[in-house]
Amino acid sequence: MTSTDEIFDIVIVGCGPAGMAAAIGLQAVSQLKFIVLEARNRVGGRVSTDTTTFGINTPIDLGAQWLHHYRPENPLRPSIKNVQQQQFHRIQQFNLSGIALTATSNLLEQQY
Image 1 (cartoon, one colour):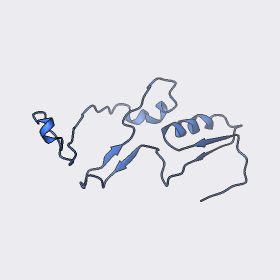
Image 2 (cartoon, one colour):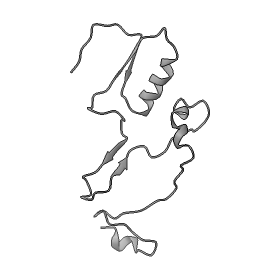
Image 3 (cartoon, rainbow, N blue to C red):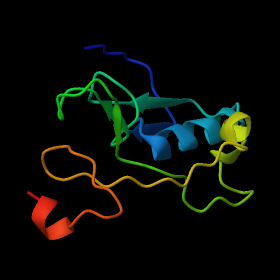
Image 4 (tube, rainbow, N blue to C red):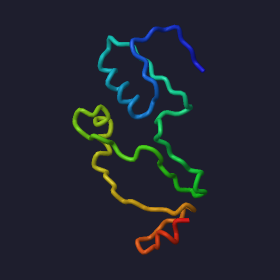
């Protein structure tokens, strides 16, 4: 745990996408002093990559799946210019055992 006696104009609570967007926006206002606080030992908020739950070696991304309100005024938009051309729309459904369902699967039988 880190502590400081500094005084800040703004305290951003949480380093998820909204907190990061706020920090990016505040960097342009050089006269304001701000700090980002995060309770977890990682950034990203609900966004997380899970590699253990399903017992497979394939990482599963949890939390945010896409960028909402993708308008020019969105502060995160400039941050993703490098991946802007990579848009994927594939959806794969899995049963509760982590087995992929096919287009011909009986969802009721394979749900559990």
